[in-house]
Image (tube, rainbow, N blue to C red; front, side, top):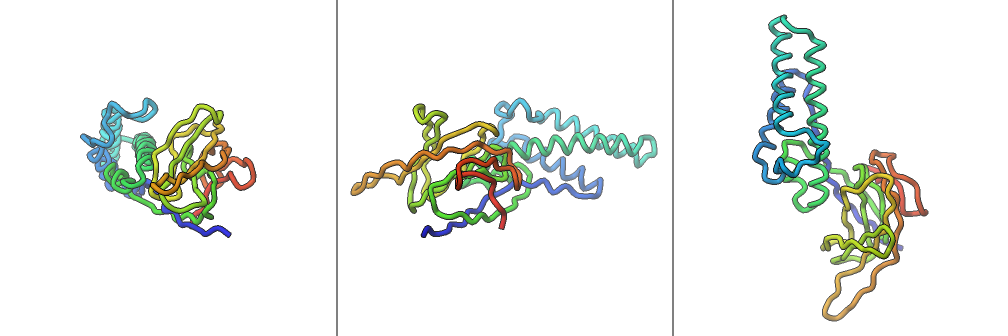
Length: 230
């Protein structure tokens, strides 16, 4: 029987306040955290993520609309619409921060808080077996091995052309940035030592899920589904 490992997965959380003045402060705080942030240089942002300049413009429009309501020169509907634009911007930037954190698990907390977001820790219980599972984050897969210690990881679309993933000091790793619906094959092995040479595990097939508690896409028995929270 295999043992059970507990994996701590860090999620970026927006935690938008309910009061309008505090919402403005929250948005400007994130804007300030991302300004000059070397972890997120503006030239590296995805094209589908709002630019820092556009975020500033949207926040300014939200502030103006809020002040207009206070001065009774503007409508509540206009303020609410401006707020929803800003919130959409912040959610998009949160997704960018999550992808970055998933790609650097060691520094995930610093990456998330450095972008101005809060951290939520999800504890995942997983049997220590060779497996590939979808997680609650869209396009992020959890790989586990049935052996302890340092591991090497590989992925492939056809089991011929192989992508080498970063080695880990643990028996699990996260693979972010995959396209939901794509089918991938994964395998692992322990890192060789002076005394022992290890072989790779059999390939594991997984169709990438779209995230969410029930976001996993069923595949071969034991190698599918999203992860429960504890």
